[in-house]
Length: 173
Image 1 (tube, rainbow, N blue to C red):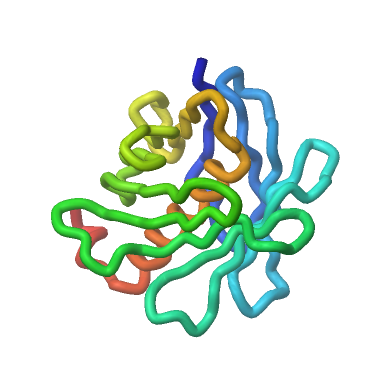
Image 2: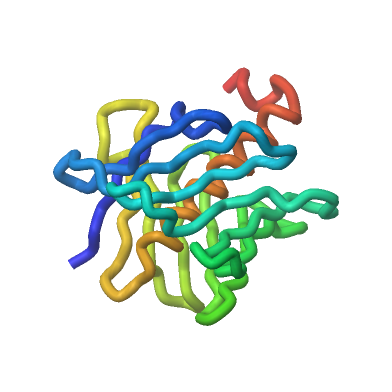
């Protein structure tokens, strides 16, 4: 049976800490936004404050890139926005010790899937919640939940940061 997590999107900003809750509304992971860094950094922690992974913005790259590092500092995955994305947003996730992931759908509206090859491993959607600032991440069994959640948070940050840079043309919708 898949597991559903809840993320409040307005809390995802650098410098803020926020919680990821399970389907029952219990806090399961803390995300610590680090302020005193040149680049954007978020640290995923368990309930006891033990670091599980870190999301870091890569500086000096041609296109948006973020890395997810394990607690030992080694890269777990690298997330990049696809250069050409007709009709829908597309992102690639190069996973260090596992199959790569492909992310497709409407990222800004939080309606997209994460696939491993042709098989869906997670779905991100706002339709499960009445609160407009909340979206869910439903992860299929046998997946690395922390990695999938970190991918969803990193893509959310990258997509909305990019939206802010482009100005007001998308906000007028």
